Figure 1: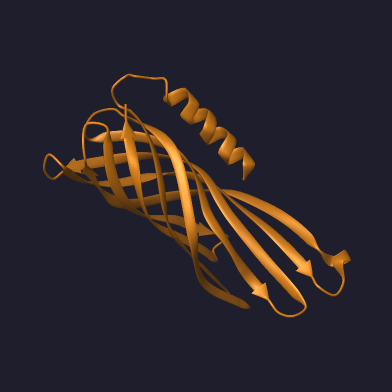
Figure 2: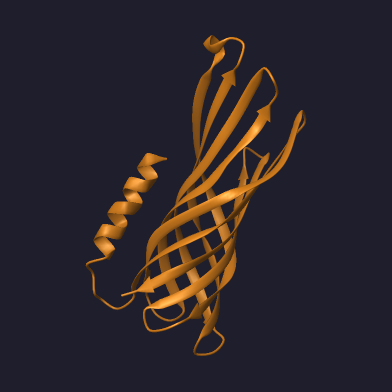
Length: 184
């Protein structure tokens, strides 16, 4: 997780001094839905998420973005004897295709690749020698759509839906976000 924030911070530090037209930074918040469905375990839960990143608009129709996303944490299992908590994060790169509806509003679709990391911590309340933590990472495709509303030459608001390809054929992650974009 810390490596995602480090990379995104470096990205933003490089992008901020650039005054060339087309570079932008963004941040957003929202909800993540996690669905796990295998033979012996089922879970549907939602949690908060946030992200930040940088991008470059090649023209009014095509942009490229990189982002660090904290997709949230949730308790996968808990009873009086044990608890299993999971935190999911991504570092992703996407291409965005935008279609302007009018001078203020546009819609977009995005597709890309995400390095999805799940950090799990297991606690045994009766015997701490069984406590353990594990981290797994996989590259998954991500796609979605959204809308963008321009407030002025530098600031716009956007909302988006994203869906990540199933992980290990049992974990499905989707997000709904709203955020702010600052264009240099």
